[in-house]
Length: 107
Image 1: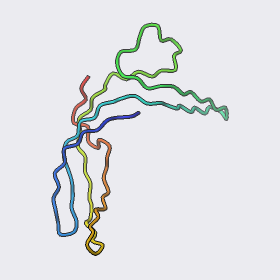
Image 2 (image 1 turned 180 degrees about the horizontal axis):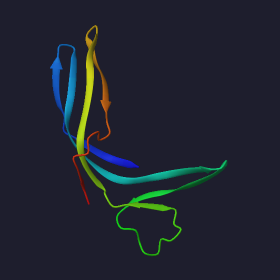
Image 3 (image 1 turned 120 degrees about the vertical axis):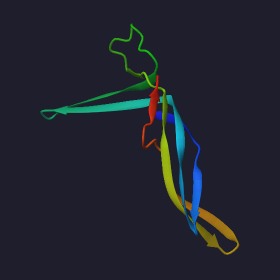
């Protein structure tokens, strides 16, 4: 699934190192799915599109998978380091860009 994330992060510095933390709101915008099932050596694969909202009544045997919750609220974190190259500076960061602690799910 594809989400558009809007994090609001606070940066806390520890010399050359820093940490970021803050809330995040994510909006589901769609995507594709692939479901692989293996039973007794026989494998089947289903693929289709991910959609948000109520599933239509006429979608029997559709290749679309519907999800009620488009919005998600959570917390994001990350750590990083400032590196100097002569007169130039770069920032190396490791961040968990997905919502890591679901605070609420809004329908």
